[in-house]
Image (cartoon, rainbow, N blue to C red; front, side, top):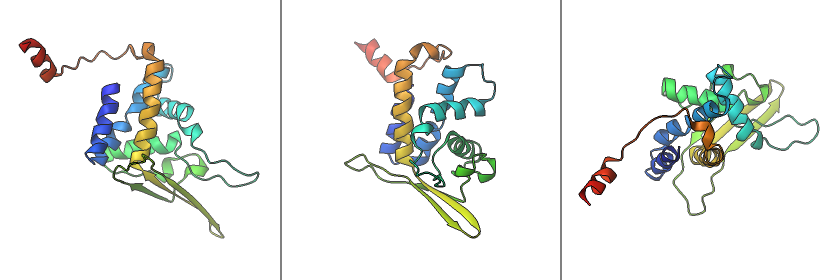
Length: 183
């Protein structure tokens, strides 16, 4: 898991934003499998449930009583983005596949931004109300999404190592192994 997180960060450092985005959107899949195993058969349901439990619930804007909620990066939104990116090569969100009315986005955009010295990156949620109804939009900063998912996944992995016993992949760093053999 740590190697995957490192690769996301290397992609961001190289300004390979879509490589970083593609990889980071798979990390909740892995954690959801660790958390729920086969107790939840649907990959979609597992992904959304894990994401909302560990990330999404913390991204909702506070509301005054009776106020219409702003859109936020819920598990449904991120899962839709994941599917569009990984299966269609299209970095967008499909409004018609979002059940939660709060997050049915009329406009979605990705923001790419070079690394800055403060490490602060922001998203922007917007809603406007008119006679035609509510229009919702979301501007997603790829660096921010990568940072939020990577930090959460690193924490989750460190605190739940025993749940990752399903992974039996052997990765050989040939350069490292060659150096050991020469010494």
